[in-house]
Length: 216
Image (spheres, rainbow, N blue to C red):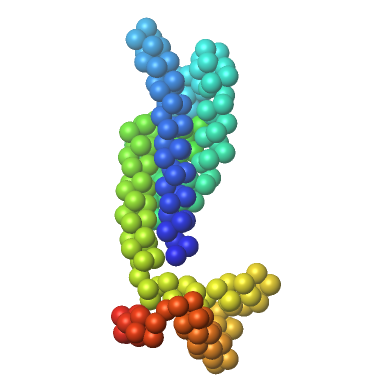
């Protein structure tokens, strides 16, 4: 049950991040295009050229650019966590030119929007492709979790876990307690009390038997 809400919150967060990232990249891309129309790219490194464009953006859009940069810096660690949780790799390997040589550099495609230390620039298309992958997986996982949440068996399983979730907050090892014999007996008693409570609320025995048959 908790997974549905986790996927929903993660999806909201990644969509907000996508919007901020697009606004940020649009500002930099505009300055980059304007510069390359009049000049050749004669900078020594990717990071040097990126820093030059960043300075131009800060001079031209000081408040807007710095605010977007701040929001990105704050969100990137969380977005990387979400990507890792759904199995999307955010790190690419940057290889040096063979004639020059050098080490292979791991570059995080989201971190690189602020500082790109690869041999070749990380493109915005690469970043947004990664975002789209995460969004697609989260949408599918959210939908699956929603239908699972409607399954009476899953709902009953969650209800039976509620006491153990409360105990977990006290610091006890819930797994050992839940799997122990008396933990299973507690679940059985809790089920009886749950059935008794439903009967008191007006559920008929036929309705409860129907649910139990469905669970089997």
